[in-house]
Amino acid sequence: MTPHMDNATPHDPNASDEASGDRRRTSREGLSRKSLLKAAFVAGAAPLLAGGGVALARDAASTGSGPLATTPECDDGDDTTPPQMEGPYFKPNSPRRTSLVTPGTPGVPLTVSGYVFGRACRPISGALLDFWQADTNGSYDMARFAFRGHQFTGTDGSFSLTTIVAGLYPGRTRHIHVKAQAPGGRILTTQLYFPNEPRNNTDALFDPELLMNVRSVGNGRQGTFDFVLDVAQTPGPTDPPTDPPTEPGTSWAAGTSYRAGDRVTYGGVAYRCLQAHQAMSGWEPPNVPALWERG
Image (cartoon, rainbow, N blue to C red; front, side, top):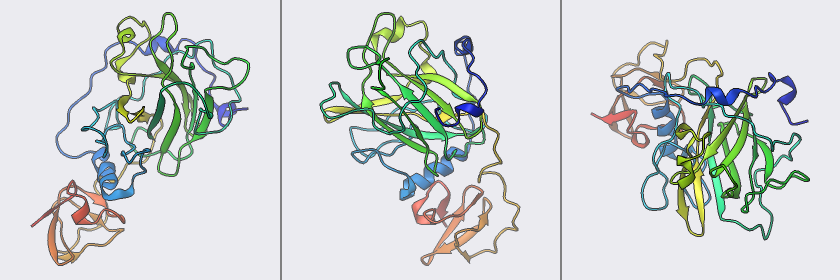
């Protein structure tokens, strides 16, 4: 049995009806939880894609010709990742693995990386991701488990999948199926899509909110996507800390809760806090300009 599935609410075959419709997003001033997470990744705390790219759907990668456009990402109050239909080709009990390819597998190599968040924009450790897709010829393997596999997110909520660009078949654009589930939570069944595909305009199931960021790297492609599950979480580090504010000029220290406007010194240089947060190793003031400015 695929892990977590036995504790989950049964899959709703009509989930695709919920995937359509317009979704509005509210713009916000200032820094959000995702900015704090991004600051950590800029400081070098994030895992990297093969080839050195940052494994975040919302961030610029460090290789290639410029940043990737954003996908649906975790932010205060944003919608969760929309569901889509399971389709007729799902098989339970897929093998646990992060690579769906074997030596000599035909197709364009593809790496998909990202994170799984809850509603408070905090990473979910141990979340199940079960992927399945068509091969380069547009066929699903129903006899065995080719291009099928499940994995669990790391302690930082990250995942990475090695596969190929999914093939086309009648009536559908290119897509990858996935079931995502926090430990003990409900299953989200959805699909990920490729940008700039002509059939995106004619596929009745296509949802632009489920577009991955994809770019060419060498003879393959890199894709990113962040999942946001409907999981309640305690507030993240952007909520005002309850600790008393630091005294002016206090030396920066990991584990300290800082308020916007607090002043510290680090390496003999004075800094002013831009956003309330709890400091952690890797978030030293020189490394995270999203949190600290000199002065």
